[in-house]
Image (cartoon, rainbow, N blue to C red; front, side, top):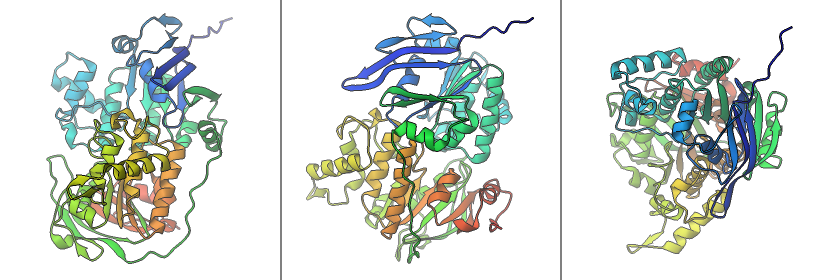
Length: 509
């Protein structure tokens, strides 16, 4: 009779602790990830997830605790040891050199000796096999956020990992890409690869993961089987309280606050997407969603609307004022604010404090008088954003780069919403943000619209668009499929338009 021999866990952490100054990032954390297991790591922004996975990857040294790999204790984990063991990670913040091509970036991560042509062919083959379209010859600075995410995933897959850590891997992927990613992850698990999966999308956790460990305040507060627990229960375990639901009262939209008439722009780089005859009307008090697969012109559309690229004057109007020829600063003076998809670099300067980052976009709000910065007003404004949006950081003097991605996003959203604009452009407003903060941000957008602001949200999260929007349009190949009221749409009809199957969305039956 054949005896079943239990396999040791692929990874075992015992008593892992890490402190940064007065902040206890991790406190006596125990965690086991089995061989071939898909294990979820859950927690709010600032719960300690990022520190813990950096310890696993050897990027951070713990103050206390042990790490064992298949029952063999690793005395001192470092990146080289992690790589030799087969630990690979898809980071939420991309680690790509913008001036290099996709293939060149992947070559650096793999330390491969094969020719660039051979590697490019392998990149193309792997990306096609898993439905993660990537052009090895493109330079990274031309890629959208979603496309950069694919590069990170493909780079990890080419390492043939034994433990794959994924931090918010679906935050900028379309529903079709998410389905393809899940098929790939399940196949990897069947082949024996262990997966540590971090996501705030609890429906994904329930559909994909075998086990879950929940962190709160740097400590393990629960372990559960996500297939047996509802997303609501897991959310309450994460935040330690019951979560509210977004609440929006029906109201009639007002006059147009942003009008786009015949917007056509050539691509600004060889791999970009040209905008073709886009017509759009955003009304006061309305939230208009724009869905689409990454790389179909979202970046170009937002650049044109925000004033980073200019066009013929009458092509774009804020209210009745023509602004197509005006730059970003001038459009802000006419009441437009912008939440970009890149947090660091465009949304904030990494080396500056939160207070200094507030000044970057609030200079036209009375915070500069007679050429002098009104520092107390700036600091008071930054502090109000910090408190209102529950930003977890050392304070308003903390450097932007010291914040987790979700907390940086909360600060940027709060900074732009706080100006009470006439028009708000928001790209992926809840990308990488925990469920509690995501609900809070969505409610803030709803409340802002209730004051009469028009809000245009570009997102690949269809659940988010259905929750907060009045109408949804689809951008495909640089052309805009006309919007329809949310009540007349389904995810299927939007998905078909996102894939270019239809040029007009059908009304729901």
